[in-house]
Length: 211
Image 1 (cartoon, rainbow, N blue to C red):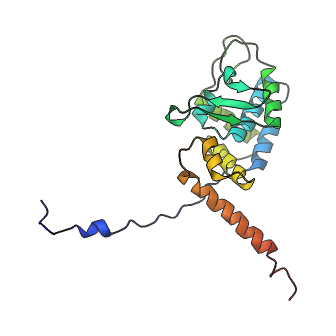
Image 2 (image 1 turned 135 degrees about the vertical axis):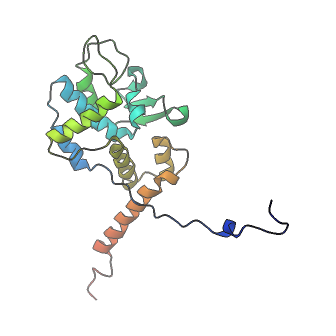
């Protein structure tokens, strides 16, 4: 029991601030090479290309991505309902024209009655693609493209950073990514600040003027 009038001086000591290091995403050049490494007009090739593009376009977590069912996606609009979001909170994510086109090529191979969007084979007996299966696709396509293997979360990071660089406000991005707050996104903001700093170094009016 503490003596009356005594207070622990340790309580007044603030924990040191840990520097927030930027998180490096997969580069778009790497993704482009991986997509090119997917053979066209084959089930595996068209499925893997669609997976790579949709992973990057949605920014979904791996488990969310694998839980998508056929009924959750509107192929015409590119809306995808994420039912199994963090905290069991559903949200809508989106894919653009190129990803929709890749998804249609993949769906043209489907001859099964599986309700899952991503499956192992195109015919009867197909199973929902597993986490290990998805990770294996990234590993194989990177190896075939002559690139280093990329993690699944690298695609989510690339989505976040690209959206910020392209002008998306951080609150909208948090909603798209399924975050309740914006603290997790501070690392990406730091990277965009580095972008603007470098842009000013290249094009600052005073340094580029002839005084």
